Image 1 (cartoon, rainbow, N blue to C red):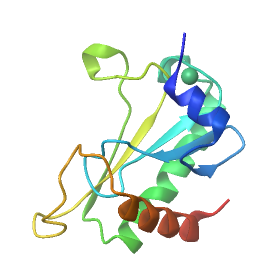
Image 2: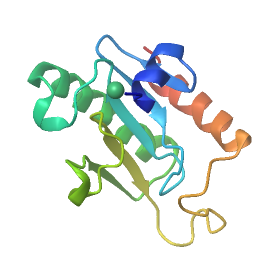
Image 3: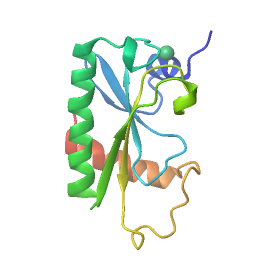
Length: 135
Ligand SMILES: [Zn+2]
């Protein structure tokens, strides 16, 4: 069975941050500008199957990303969420934590949620995140 996230991890395509036991990518269909996913490198179905030390390090990264959203993107709020199983909205059956910046309505008025990011947006966000977090 083919897993999208395992595949991304294997070929490294689109990986923004790589840590010891997890990695970070941009959500392909972001709910807001900067929407990122923190994903364990090993395949676990969801949070309930993911070892606690891995969850801890993933959450530390989610927090760093959140800080970056506040400081560099002027996010007004941040949503950190993980969906467990389809009734909760889990679409890819490999654990992932969403880190979603939220902005007051006047910011990024042209942003269209859940539309694929442009190359330019992706590049800009990539630079920003790498500069702020690195590894
Ligand atoms: Zn997987």
